[in-house]
Image (cartoon, rainbow, N blue to C red; front, side, top):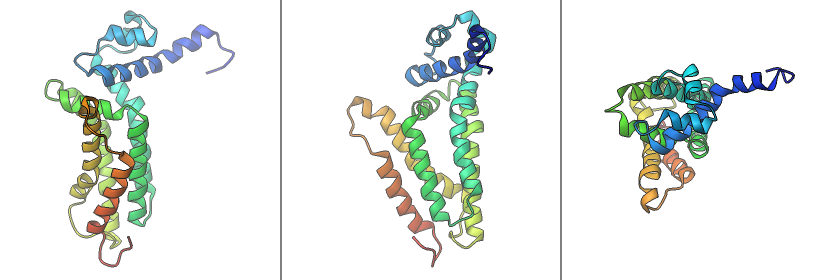
Length: 212
């Protein structure tokens, strides 16, 4: 945007991003069913009518939240997995560290809990989450595992199952943090959990003679 452009014009161009940021916050705090468009509009500093100029439905807003506020983080991890030539153990440690960082500094955990809790009543929300995030992350890790198997680094086995085994403890930790910690449960340190999990699962995945 030209810094010399009139302020009102710059402000109008920024509105969709401001609305998406407000929607992310409201979805994370209230869930999908309880999120109200007038509250999202108020947080974004626009009228409800102005919000409708950019997003016709709450589902449209959720797609924008996933596509603009969350998917780029997962895309960066996917690019890391696809570009890494090996060894596999270095890739896994790097990907796990990056995922832990993303979970720690974004609202992705709160939104993931929302999707899990409301998927039955709002299947489109689950479909968007799967198609835009989960499927890509799973495919990237499955591809990296298959490549490592072809190099002889990883034992035989279904790459997609291996990928799910890798991701599952982090998902459980997020559910624990979002569901039980607010009511008094002792939290897990995500970085410690991820590091310990990676070293444990590498011992089971790496082929004989591969380093650990």
